[in-house]
Length: 292
Image (tube, rainbow, N blue to C red; front, side):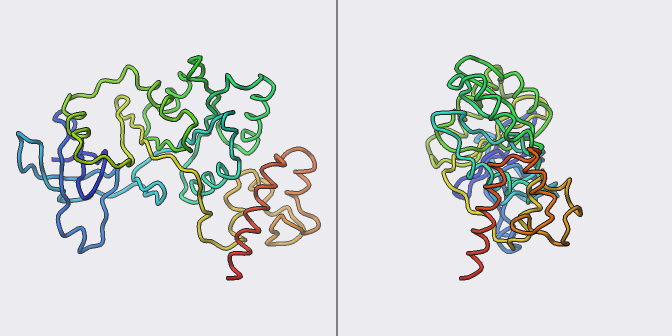
């Protein structure tokens, strides 16, 4: 029997099997021996031990399409990062760090700014252009006014999407809004996942429809730039790529060199200055990290 791990806590893995329900499974010792860790999103093969109590064992992890390190999930099609447009004001440094993590793991990312009802139209437009100029799809939503929710549903449909963002930005409200009409195939899902046995907050997959899954993850308040060389950072800013090979010096870091095509584009308004300043901040952080 095959299914998908939709949640994993304290050595227990909850596996959704289409047409049946949720099985609470433990991983066989062979996974520890082979240093394999089952992840939320894994397609797995299980053996049923107790049909009445929906219990089983994980016996095989099927080949992964991809594997994210942070958050630790497998087989995703895209990421959606949610920040508040205001209250709290968006932390652009934190957002850029998340985007770098996803770029590095080759996962396309949609940016959603929620609580747009707290901004003037002109301010919201500026915020939208901020990242659209960098090549990202940007959604502007207000759960309070039910605005933009349908656009979120459309972009989620037919895909497995990992959803992340800091606490307090309305992530839970938005994810609840897009699944109001959702009815899972079995009532045993809530029974198995909310029996009170495990209460720690972990990533969890939510079925929105046919081949449509939302991976809800815990909120974050800080992110470290992955360990990499400072010269690698430029590869994870999509707006820089069009200027690759146009700088005067090969290996230009776009920080101080003369004849830099990226800095020329910045002066011409083709690259957002706040994004560029964030790049310089992260570049210095990586540079200083290598001193110690």
